[in-house]
Length: 374
Image 1 (cartoon, rainbow, N blue to C red):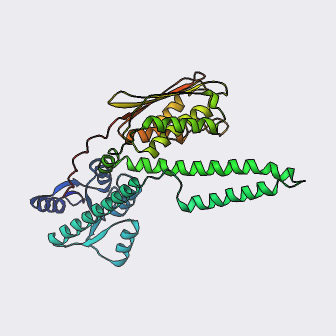
Image 2 (tube, rainbow, N blue to C red; image 1 turned 90 degrees about the vertical axis):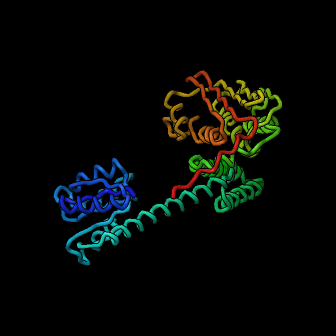
Image 3 (tube, rainbow, N blue to C red; image 1 turned 60 degrees about the vertical axis):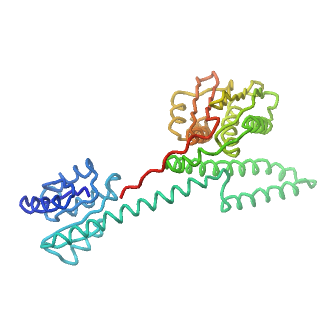
């Protein structure tokens, strides 16, 4: 264990330090609470042991400040004091201390408490990592039932309203239907993209599950690209603007995720380019990589918008409306990256944009399983 020992009594601190080191532990010493705060943030110990009564920030204040800082908030902290009382123990626990040991104590008692706190912290972290990994493996490209069901009910109600509005004298009612449909579709899409984006960000931190993901494969990737590009063009009512140039190829990604990637890139190209200007969608397999290129002649992106896409964060225009730097391109970029590919975006204001996505043609070699620390 890496232990930070904070105590202003030099003889006591050195004595405990020596005993802990003889048992094989790494010990960092601090002579007061202020020094302890600095060393905790610098060395990030496995556990902090601190006296309560000290000059320059006492044990209670140090506990509170450690818990407020994101890098030290979950480090176990054991308070020691020569005056054990229920009120002091309650105060220490309220501030975030994990245990409370009274002087004098036996070294076995102290070590047992420290080992227990460190073990619980590691177990908690492993549990969180496992849950995040499970979330990542179940990346869904559609909203869950809890959200899809009420959205479906709204759309069903809109359809019923549309039918009722066909009756004579219901022209005003008929005008309400298209905005209602459009709003429900926007909510459905935005909700789905927020969930997918969150899952992709979590998934991208787990090497073992990334290795499993990169074993997927789509043999006719060009057909998926062509079908999704036509679907986006039809939805935008711009089939005449679509220039499709595909060649047979495969990609190390599932059909559903490749379709999602193509949808986000092509949809943005149509949405942010004028009607009557071409949107070119090309794909080719060079034997090693599957290359998808989408080019439009729209408004383009500013350097700030390009930076937002690079950071996978949504952006907004001056009027608060969506811009090309929304979650769509961020999702496409993360889909490419988690499958071992690359996402490149080149654009200038008023000169359109070109997106190039490169994916491995074949599944990547599975990585060797990582050894868990004892």
